[in-house]
Image (cartoon, rainbow, N blue to C red):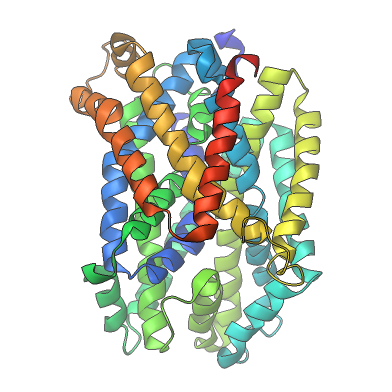
Length: 468
Ligand code: PHE
């Protein structure tokens, strides 16, 4: 059965696709605004710690489980231990919920490609208000969300190596180069130094439990972990690939893009005299202002930036859709096209709800938050981290240590000197660390009730695990 599974066209193809999944709105849209809201440098230090000690290990664990079983998330758990099938299903649910808000932001990026030419840059002082008016509009962002989602559906319907791989290979490097250019422009603006201080001189007085949970959730979100995505991608990986070095490469790429986005945004933000805690509009407000000062070439650069951002978002969202689709195909026996169209259709509805929750439907709340925040908080602050905790417990306590080592070293063909360290992290340190951060990091009534709701969902799934 394993032989029939599609494989990645090449090693670089896999790295690019996995990095494509990791690098996305999480790095360029989310990371800067979370860092801004959580005090800058201190958040970044905590984030980096989580990436090194938790993210990398979990990614390696996911690749290993995926390749060992040759199955997507649900099938992989099920094959090893039926009591854990629920963890795979939880991942599918997370993917589905992330797709409840991700296409909305992907749609904003898509819209800004066109807007670059239609007056976005003409009045720098109005860029912030324009963003607010745009996302609150009851119709316009819905159209762009639908366009973004439609592109996803077309790519995933074509199948994994045809669509996903090609898109990633060409446009990821473009994004990287562009971010470097923007970062150079940003740090050379007068007054940029304050932004670099904000990023790299941690102010520990602003840190609390919430900072830790925000950083942990962001690490999982940004590295595409805790929901089976990297298990699914790993399942397409050939037996000769080096898993530890693949996980290292992908984590490094993801982290460097996030830091680069920070360096691109904060110096400019301080140079323009803006507030770092401006929230989700940050990248859509700061970056156009940089381009607005460039004169004639501004619109062209701005358009290229938003094309690259849209594509980065796409290579991530297709991986999310693929998790749902792989589940329907592998576990429910559906055809690829049927799986894609049906799940895509439901995502249109959740996307509409999310988008409208930022405008006309802002009064309509669930657990005290609108649809957009509901999907966002539930996945990023709850499901992903707890999904990671469950995976760590599963790998550490329910899988055979020798088999893990065997898989990770390709049967002894390659060396992985840190195996024992990795194993201790996954078995003991990570589950405890996540539990502590999740417990002390939840703040406020809305988040607490969402956490209770999330835990209830997980408990129900776990009870019925063997039936899933
Ligand atoms: N890592 C992606 C990003 O940073 C989002 C994502 C999360 C993709 C989980 C897949 C799984 O934008």
